[in-house]
Length: 177
Length: 220
Image 1: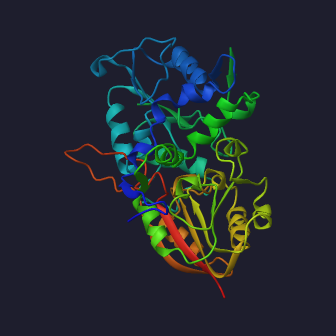
Image 2: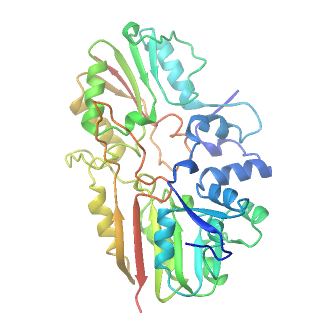
Image 3: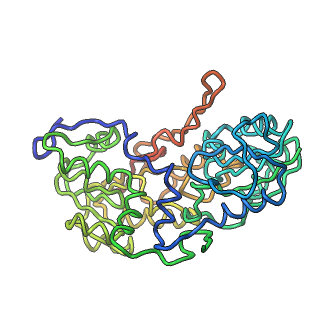
């Protein structure tokens, strides 16, 4: 297959066109021309500093929570709290999200951030008894499924893609066993 | 230090570099244009591009909000329409509009109208707002003209993903658009099958083009 000017057409698998995620925070905060922080990151930092048993094991997939006010451990076995901001966690099937949270909660507290746009990404889980309001429904789903006390720390707002949700997911829950 | 909740809490730098970065982050296929314009013998496309090329009708083709200038060497009678003024600075032939309703004033009645995972079509507050966009696109089509429309289900509408069957919802939507006949659709979701207990957790079966793809034909 040739182009109008006679070049060859090469088929790409598409993977090379998106490589932003790991630096998304720095790229976006660089738009302002002055030092700027994400309030969501600070709120989580402050909440854990005041409330979480230490040390904290962090499961993340980008350059966040690098300068925090709570003790961090790289050894999961030593952790008394787990902080999950990794976007991939929200892309697990719903029953697997629940299973993994319940597993963490056997011995630890969890602060989990879920990306509302990724939940049920495989379209395999539906519970029509949940609240019609999506944010309430996410909270209700966790309360029904999780073996622990679930406190919702999320803000209520209409997601329009400008809230840094792809840096730190927006639906935030503090869960204690 | 200032702490912000979202991008518009503070004024965004108006420099060309920042405006270009903001545009480029959401236009995945801009990278194809960067590659193709420098390569002397090869043009890079993906399989969905080829799928569209094989189905275009003769006549003018409009590509909207999709960094469509990467298709300049493969589609005759091509019109590139964008909403970001920064596009004009590196691709002077682009037509810039502030409002979708204005597109029809800048292009001939099209045989084909193509929208591939357009970031500006995302985050519609209601399905009516989405349908209004579709109406603006069909206003540019000749009778019998084709609308190629694709997007990711995760970023389109504020649907309750725990109570809504997405496949059913979008199938119903595609079959209900006034004046348009659904010719073809491909609705796919990332299947999260574990490999030795580990889930791949991929974002989308087609992050670039969108996992929901439709071809509509304007009624004659």
